[in-house]
Every structure is written in C-alpha cells, then in structure tokens.
Image (cartoon, rainbow, N blue to C red; front, side):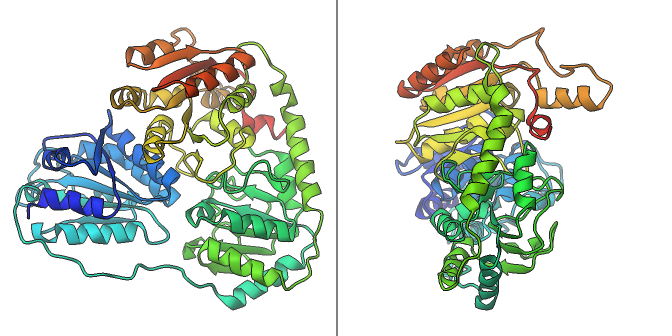
Length: 547
C-alpha cells in the first residue's frame, strides 16, 4: 500500500476528521490522498504558527486529539510555538512533519534541520526510519499523545517515503497506560486533613478539565463548603456563577483572592502543577496543610511542599476523596460567606473601571458588555495579552470546554487560530474569538483563513493601539514614556483590514453598542469582526488589583 494513503487511513481510523496545515511540495502526497476522500478535511492556514494553534483550539474544546502537517525546517520551526503551548497545557496533538530524505540528511538539503531540534517542545519526538514502519510509528504517536498526562507528539516522515508502495508493518493492540486507581491510604489521610480544617480551600487547574472532572470537583467543594480558586488553565472547570467561586490565579490576581488563600488552614490543589506563572513565582501564601493531586510526579514539591502528595487522575481522586469525606464530619462551614466576601471585595475594586460608559472604554467595561452580547453556551477563545488578565478576573465562564486560553506559555496570537479549531470541532456551537490588537496583529493572516474556509466565527478585537501591558511597565518601572510602545500616531483600522480580507465588519464604542453589535454579529452567517476602541492608559490589572 502507498505510504501517503496509509497515513491518512491511520488518521481517520484514530478519529481525526480535520488536518490543519499549509501545503508544500514535500507534503503534497498527503494532500493528494485527502483530496480523494470525504471523511477528512484539510484546513489551510496562512502561517505555520497558526497551524498548531488551530489544532490546539480543536483539541481543547472537543476533548479529543487534533492533527497537523507542515513542511520541514521553516514550517516545522514556525509550528514549534504552538507545540510548546500544547505541551505546557497537556493538550494531545499529532504533529506530522515531512522530513528530509535519509540519504540527503546532513547535507544541508532544502529546509533541513536536525530532527532533535524539536525534542524539547513535544512530549515525544519520533523520526520514522523506514517506510515500512510509518503507520506503526503513527499508532505509537497516537498512543503517546493520549496517554495521561497528554501532550503533543511530533512524527517526522521523510518526503520520499510518502510516495512508496511497500508492505507496511502493523502494530498489535496495546493497553494504553491509565491512572485507573488511587492510593487509598493517601486519600484517607487527605480526607482526615481536609475534614478537620476550619477554613479549607480548593485550588483547581486544567487537569480537572483533562479528566472531565468538573462535576467531581463541584461535589467535593460543596461537601467541604470550601471556596474554589482556579488557575489560568483551570478557568471554567468550576462555574463563575457558583456560590463557592473564589477567583482566578493569574498575573492580575489581587489582594482579596490572595488573602482568601492565605487565611485558609488547609488546601486541596487538584489538576495543577502550581507552576511559577500561575503562582507568581510561588509568592502566593498557600497553607502548609496542602494536599496536592497531579499526574506529574516531579510537580510534587516544586514551589510548595505538600503535606500529602498524590500522583493520580484528578477525577478518580476527587471521586475517592468524596467517598472518604462522606464518612466524616466536616469542621468547616462558612465557605460560601468567605467566597462571597472575596467576590464583593473584587467587585468593589472594579467599580471605578466599570463606571466608564464613553469611548474609549476600559477593558473591564468592554468585557462586561461583550459577555452580555454572547450566548451563555458559546465557546470563547481568548488570546494572551493584558486584556486576558481582565478576562480571567471578570469574564464569566460556565462550562469547561467552552473557554480556551493559553496557560503558562502565555503566547500571543492564539485567539483567532484557536477559534478556527474550536468551530471546526463544534460546528453547531457559536464561537467567539476575544483578542487585543497586539495579539491580533500576530495572527491577522488567519482572518483570511476564516473568510476562505467560510468558518462562522465572530472575532472581537479590543483596540488600544498599544502593547499597553508592556508600555505601562516601561513607564512605571523604567525611564520610558507613557505609551512607549503604542502606535496611536499610526492607528490600524481592523475593520478596514478585515473587510479587505473578506469578513463582514462592525465597530462599536459604547456599552450598549457593544452588546447589541456582538449579539448581531454572532447571529449573522459567516465570519465577522467587531472592533472596540479601548483606553491605552487604563490601569493594568497587576497594579490596580493590588493597591
């Protein structure tokens, strides 16, 4: 069988119905195979960086695996940004890179890079050494990517292999490694510790989403009556509307949420590695009586020394913990009041920013109006940047797969590509990309992908003509001017750019206009961009929330 045809068969057999990429001469054999089928779609991006972000958005919102294909060298290296983002977020991707032919390797063939260049941005980097082994190696990659903790796997397939007709090796059935059990003695000890706490708290991360354990998290939090604080990647695994919602840990976390954690006498950290970005270089004061549940053994003791460490699946551990807690009397009981007081303190701090009703709006006011115009059940893809911190703090999210943002990698330029992936994964769901103008400029080419592929995504851009989070720091901490990295003298009209790329466009300036315009854009057919001017000199969350 021809290798190119077998590769596509392998993808579809493993549930892949969309392949994200940019065609090149090296990858054309794969595109040829796809063109003859109706069970898989090739989505052509405009830059390879967007390819891996599109797949990341697909996997994050679907809960499944996504696949990409790029050419060697420049294509592969451009995609590295998104692969590292997926690695940090434990998102399963299968990344196919068409490799330099073995007989040319080492001779500076076109686009050649040493295969080990990619070792540190993926969970595993596989180079196919013989054409006969191609499918067996792909099957191994699928298994590795979807074995917890999940992540991206790169498979390098030499160009000349794809056209060969060979007897392909077949891989036998294997049992995928799973964390099917939990350490009972540790769970018992954790239940004792948490049940005896007067003021427990739960800190939940993206591992809860990966484990589909939001219901189990809610059950444990309610049984303990413990406030829940979320990480960057934990946003939406616990609904913002819940009485026990305490806040989000990020660069904009304020004193009220920090005090909520510090005043607790025990903590359950579940599905999080307590990374330096989330925990602000571990400056947040976490109780010594800490139960830490994570799939990464080397995360235990990094940043914080737990009283009890459990390396196991978040969902199964929460289920076992709830069973143990049900047999105990719970000492705590005022978690709802503690959470409510924290939320009230945060709202009071935001009141001044929410009072702005004329253009340019603050990000907080704009986000309130945007949220009011978006259906509750829409999927939201949020880019990185200063506005993202305000989004984490103020933008309500309700379902774990309906909110996507990069975690500790914090790369900009993800918003629109991830929304493309999200819409293709969830064609019947409204999808909205929230982005700042800085982030949009890093992926603006993907507006054309939206138009060309006729993907019904609404892009909402908050335009302050500035890398404002950088300018604010430059003016506050260094001898630089206010707005040092702004471009207000050469402003960009994103409506003009988007219209030129084939999108419908709208502009809104007041809260009422924003709500109505966003709502109408989502209801309309086809991709639409909504531009909202915001204040480049508004306070940044890291400063404002800690005064």
